[in-house]
Length: 135
Length: 135
DNA sequence: TTAAGTGTATTATATCACTTAATACACTTA
DNA sequence: TAAGTGTATTAAGTGATATAATACACTTAA
Image 1 (tube, each protein chain N blue to C red):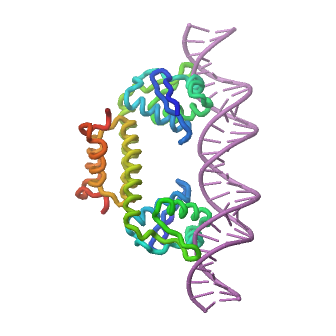
Image 2 (cartoon, chains in turn red, cyan, purple, brown; image 1 turned 180 degrees about the vertical axis):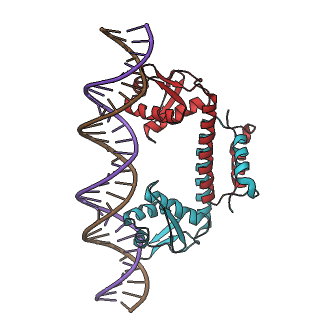
């Protein structure tokens, strides 16, 4: 429903999915797209919780998953920081993309759709803007 | 975990997702792919529940959604039947595919991946068998 | 008419994921 | 020392999911 800006991070939180999952996805996206830079400080757990009007434990859960992903590093007493390693971001992005793509191809297969069917649909709907999904 | 055959229908039920959702998806798939024919009789609620060792209410929930989708028709006292209308199947398949594709493209966009990135991955992984996802 | 097999509805119960709340602790920096 | 970090714990509430037990209306075939 609402859009929120917290430092360099933008959030769209609703009730369609678990809150921690939305936070997780949207921070991942910001890191993957470079909207927040390598090594940058993230909002503190308490600050983000307050901004998003969500329980600190819910933010914690998202932050812990981000660290397991290798996308962030935590320093006790200092805060949470985006990883400084471009390789970590790249490899995570690749792995997640592969997971999404495989799962998507399974869905298509279950409907009996071929790769050509998919291409036709995409070309109609998205390729009006010369073949990129970004911008 | 287990594979089960109930008439013309195959099922793989586990605990990764809600049971009614798995039943729903797998029946949808069977109809979309023609594994069960137009107008064919579906297993009764009680029979399928017993075969899958699941509560009848759980099967009911899946069957009700199938009818809302226009994929099945119910006849009181007789049973549940696959729709006899190929158009119903086609239009449902198209609508669901569009939903899946749009959601997938959103995921890709959130990772900053372009359509070309996706194509490269697919060609590597799936196009060893001349461009189709089915067989 | 009867019995068996359909879908359907209701009520109760249980479990689990998710979320909030309140509180406390260890660590770092100014 | 004080303020700001991440972290851990315990308690509670809600909603989705699933089971269980019953009952009802309808259709078909014996």
